[in-house]
Amino acid sequence: MKKLVLATACSMVAAIAHAQSSVQVSGIIDLGIDYAKGSQSQARLRDGDMAASRLIFKGVEDLGGGNRAAFLLENGFTADTGAEFFGNNRLFGRQAWVEIGGGWGTVRLGRQYTPSFDGLVKVDGFYVNSNVSPINLVTSREGQGAAKAIYLGRFDNMIAYRSPTLGGFSTTLAYAPGEAAGSSSGRNTGANLMYANGPLYLYYAYQAQNSGTAAAPVANPTRTTFHYVGGTYKIGPLQLGLTFEKDSSNAPGTNDARHYLASATWEVNAFNTFRGEVVKRAVDNSPLDPYALTLGWDHSLSKRTILYARAVYVNNPAGGSSSINQIPIDANSGDNGSSIGFGIRHNF
Image 1 (cartoon, rainbow, N blue to C red):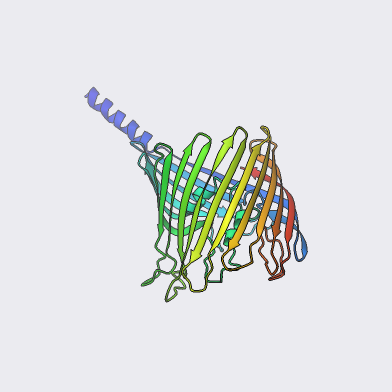
Image 2: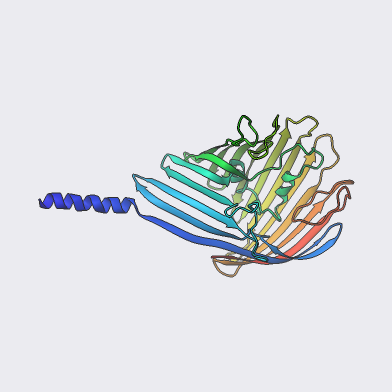
């Protein structure tokens, strides 16, 4: 009888241990003062020149046997006004997903980062920041035609498998069905292959986006593809990065474009980090080939609070009007643009 009671108690303890879970609430508030000059000049209080402000709910449950379930809800907002941001009026427009995983990898369902973003963000010295990162030139259609899809760093309705790391290699496969009845409108796919070993990181990523959506399907969806390849190498406190990107559309009359990224991140000491990055855009059959340069300095006041500076410059050829960081540049003006900003990022 004692053995039975003991066995039952042990089973109950094991079940409780397997059911252990935790939920965390965290986030970022990032605000800065910014001055931009392009075709016009503008003084601004900006959100997110280092990292966009957000509120995060994250949970994980131990399922036993090395398996777990997890979820993440990530709301984006602008701290200067308190308004929703980055989600097109959706409560959790940054991310909203649930996953199950273990030693075999993870399967994640919901709105989440694409495999190409996961590969690129490790090379970009500004973490693909939607304001100041020069790689935002990849979202331009200038010189290519309006049928080219705008690059997406997140997919809705995405099903993704992320493998474990084996011998330094890992991969992610992703598919978003688009959900348009009788049409491939809005269908998106992606994949990456990453390798990390000591100071070396290498990656290749593929992304394909169909035009149209479930709410607004099109009769003959066009397809835009993005290819990324690059990596980083760390020499002591200095990390150097390179990436080549090519995007093309099967829409008639659409030109291919290429982007060349070079980045450097220097950890000067425990409190200060210097960042620099340049991206050159080149479009087939078009003279509209701008480049963008960003320099940054981060100074840590604590583990949670950072003071930072960001300087951005965009160089346009005659007739060009590419811009990042929302620098005001008139269409077809050929004007260059610049901005400088100072801010505070606080994690909670």
